[in-house]
Amino acid sequence: MTEHPDHTWVEIINPWDTTQVLRQYLLVDQAMSSSALEALQAQHPTSVLLRTPLQRILPQSTVHASLALWMGAQQSLVGLCDTAYIIAPELKQLRLPDFGRGDQPNLERILAVQTDVCLFAPFENTRYASLERAGIPIVDCADYLETSPLGRAEWMRFYGRLWGKSQLADSLFAQEVQHYDSLVRIVQVSTAQRAAHPLSPSTSSSPKKLANTTKVGVRSQNVRDISESLRDNLTNLRDFPESLRDNDVRSKQQTSANSATKVASSTVSSSSLQRPPRVWLDLPWQSTWYVPGGSSYLATLIADAGGDYPLRHNIQAGSLPLPLERAWQYAQKADVWVIKGGDEVPSHYAALKEQERVYAQFPAVRSHRVWVCNTMQVPYYEYTPFAPAQLLREWCIMLGTLPSDSSTTLRYFHPLSR
Image 1 (spheres, helix red, strand yellow):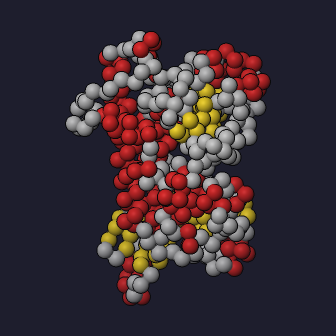
Image 2: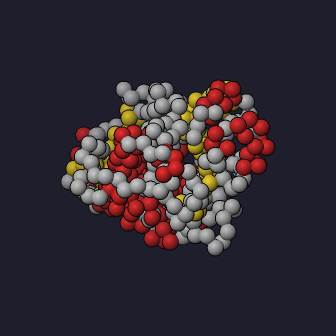
Image 3: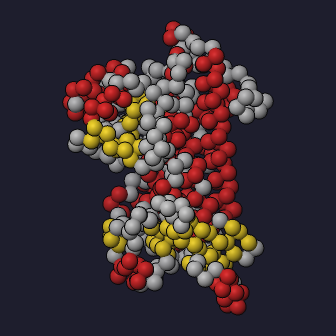
C-alpha cells in the first residue's frame, strides 16, 4: 500500500503465486476533479478505481461486516451474504438484507441496490464471473490467507481507507500491535525464567513475579504489572467498540448470571513444565484428522502464546490431512487439547469420550485440560481477525503461560465441562 497526498495505491500479491499480482486498486477521494482522475488512471491503467469513502458495500462474510460496525461504517452496508451465520448480537441488530450464498450471490439484488463494491474472498482458480461481467468492482479480501495474526489484522488499514477511516484504522492496528507484542514479551520472559529456574509441581500453582529483563526487548516497566493488566481486562485495547465490549458473549454452557467464561481455579499452570506446553487441536472428520500446517496462522498463534505445536516444522500454511492413528500419536503427547468447531464440539467430558474411546487415554483429557469454542454460539469469526490480542491472551491462559485465577474471564473459549 503506497499513500500519496491525493490517492492511495494498493497492490495485492497473488497468495498462490507470489510472483504474480492478484489485483491493484487506486483509491481516490470522491471530490477529485475529472482531470486529476484521468491523469492518475493513465499512470495506473490496470488498477481498479475506487472513489472513497465508499457508500454502498456488500461484504461476503460477517468478518468484514463486523469490521464496518467496529469502525462506525455500518451505514455503508447494503446487506450481507449468508446472514443465517451471523452470531454477533450487534450485527444481528442491523437486520441486514440477505444476498444469497457467498459463493453464489444474488446478482439481481446486487444490481438493484446499486452496489459500489463487493468485499469477497478470493479462491485459487476461481472468479466471480457474474459480478465481473456486470462491471461490479470486487475487493479481494485475501486477509484470511495471512499466516500471522498481526499480518491479518493489518488488512484493517486497507479496509479502513475504503470507508474513509484511515486514521482510525491505523490507530486501532497500532494498538493491536502494541498489546499483542506486550503479551508475546511476557510469555518470552516467563518461558526463559521457567527454563532457567524450573519450579517444582508443589509450588507451581502460585503465580510468581516475573523479573525484568532486556534479553527479549522488555524495558524497565514491571512485567508483572503488564501481565496482570492484560489478564484482568482488555478494555484499554479497544479491541471492540464500546457496545461490543459491554455485551458479554454467552454460550449454552454458561448460566445467564455469568458475564463471560470463568477460568476454573483448578486450571493447571504450565509453570511446572521446563518445556513449552504441547498442544493438540480440534476433532477428526470421518477417518481423517485435519490440522493446520506449521506455517499457518494458528501455528504462529500457538508459538506466540508459548506453546509447542507438533507440526511446527511443517512448511505448509494450509490444512494437513492426517490418518487417525497418526493424529492419536500426537494427541497422546499433548498437555492441552483445544477444540474449535460447530455443533460437533462436545459439551462435557463424557460426550467427548463417547465420540471415541481412545480419547480417555489422552493426557489432556485425564488432566482436564481440554478447552472448547463453539463457533455457532460465540462470535469467534466476527471478532478475532482484527483483534488478535484478545485471542492471544486466551491462548496464553489456556496454555498456562499467562497467570490466571478463578476471576479471569474469557470471551471465546472455556474449559470443557466435567
